Structures are given as structure tokens and as C-alpha cells.
Amino acid sequence: MAGISPAEQAAMARARELALRGPRGVNPQVGAVLLAPDGAVLAEGWHRGAGTPHAEVDALSRVSPAQARGTTAVVTLEPCNHTGRTGPCAEALVAAGVARVVHASADPGDASSGGAERLRAAGVDVARADEAEGDALIADWLFVQRTGRPRVTVKWAQSLDGRAAAADGTSRWITGPEARAHVHRERAAHDAIAVGTGTVLADDPQLTARIDGEDAPQPLPVVFGDRPVPEAAALRRHPRGLRIATRDLERELFALAADGIQALYVEGGPTLASAFLRAGLADRLTVYLAPTLLGGPRTALDDIGVGTIDEQRRLTVSRLEQLGRDLLVEATTEKER
Image (tube, rainbow, N blue to C red; front, side, top):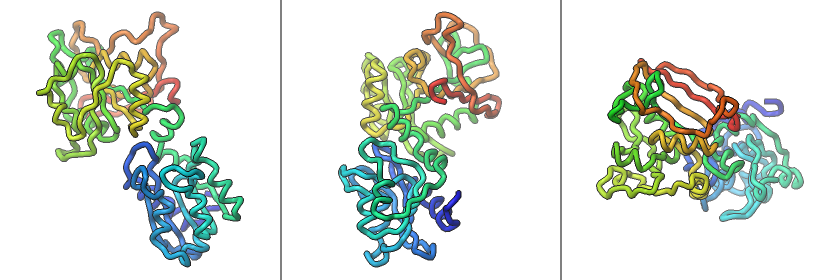
């Protein structure tokens, strides 16, 4: 990275590690490292959630005012330039006498952006590190800032002839243990997991994430539909609680984003998967192809609004992987690219 010293590059890598200690939510995960003029690490910080000090301020709080003066702040996101629950980080860095700021991602907010300009106006040297790595760290949060809704991944498993279940409705198990283990990792990587009431009534799923037999980060279960979830349903005992949603997908997505949900995993049933695709609200697809044939009427997808070949939903395959006997296909939609 031009203009970025080896010490600053190492500090940025460490700041990305620190950022992941913070929670995902309405605010981005951000990490910061404070360097002495000779490149030695003086302090580290990260954002611990809404209303808590931002990463830069957290790092500054761990040194004396004398130590802070003349330092370099390395931070994964451009310091903010607005007052919310906390004050502007750009002003805090200026007041502390920080001499140089190295940041990765630019702040996309209309109100919070402009921190780099404010720092330069105060005489602080500002440098931009690798933007791509910084953006990858907070990709889902950036998606929410751009669209106002979570990034949506739609998942299903199917036979080679496109069926999700046998003619009598039975579907456990189409795929093998390797594919099912991958599903648990996907669940843990998302903030919420969605199913329809039909899936709840037919399968009584737990929708928990387990990796190598151990508990993992748990997504919030969200049930879409009009029918009530039985009091005895397993989801009523989910460690994250249960959220009931209406059939208005777009409105519910905006509400989820307002509550800090950045990534939604749509797992439950052809009806719900097809509804997201039909509404143009699917950003990524994760499909597990099992080397088996089922025949019958239980297709993996219902109507998705394609009436003619000219209306087909073209995808870009981003990943192909063999999982035991099954094949994983990951793809993105046109608008996601």
C-alpha cells in the first residue's frame, strides 16, 4: 500500500481482528490501533456496540493525554464526523493531538462522513489504506447503508431433478452430513434466519446453529406468514427468541435492518424462497444439489414471476464446491454484482 509503512500495515491487520470482537448491529464493527512515532503499539480499541465509545476513542482512553499527542491512529473505518450517542471521532482525534490517521473504508453516511476532511483541515495527516479489505470487513453493514435492508441469502436443497421433497412431502434427508454441516456454518454467519409458517408446521425446526457439535453464534429466527406458530413449537424455545413477520417482505426487511439485522438467511420452504425471488429481494443463492432423483410435484421453487424466457433471472455463479456426495452452488443476482 503506497504511503503506508510496514508498521501501519501490521496495525491495520490487527485493527481488523479487533473489529470482529465487537457485535454486529446497527453500527459497523470497527477496530483501531494507536502507534507511537517510532511505530510501536501504544493502545488498541474496538467498538462494543451502540452508545459505547467508538474504536478510536476507546484506544485513546487507554493512554495519557501526553502519550496520545503526536501518535498515529490506524482505524478500519474513516473516523465519523457527527454527534450521535457519542461525539465525533474526528474531533476527538484532533483534540488529542493525533498527528496522523490511516483508515481503510470511507464512511458512507450522509451525516457521519467527512471525517477525513475535518482531520486534514485541522492539520492531521490522513492516509487511505486498502479499501477492499476494509469494505470486506463490513460488507453487510455497507449493504444496509446502501439499500436500507439486510443482504438476503436464499438457500434450498434439491435433487438433480429439482425436487425439494418426495411426493408424500418427506424431505429428511436429501443431502448428506457434509452439506448439513455447511448449513450450520451459514446459519452462524447470518444475523437472522427466515422460514415460513408452512415449514414450522410441517417440520417443527429448531433453527439453531451448531458447528462441530458445539453451540455457535445463533441467528434470530423470523417466521413469515399468517398462520400462528404453535405454543409447543421448538422455535418458541430458541435462545434468541422468536420474531413473527407478515407477508410484506420489503417492509419487514426494513424493520429488521432498523433493529441491526445486516444479513438474513432464508431457509424455510419453496413458498418463502419463491416469494423473495419473485419480489426481487434475493441477493445471493446457496443451493445444495444432491445426486438423487425424486420426481413428483414437490419442486424446490414455485412461481418466481418468470412468464417468458426473456424474463429469466440470470445469475452469476460465485462458488462451486463438492460437499461429500453433494454439490454446493453459490450464485449472485444481477443487482448484487
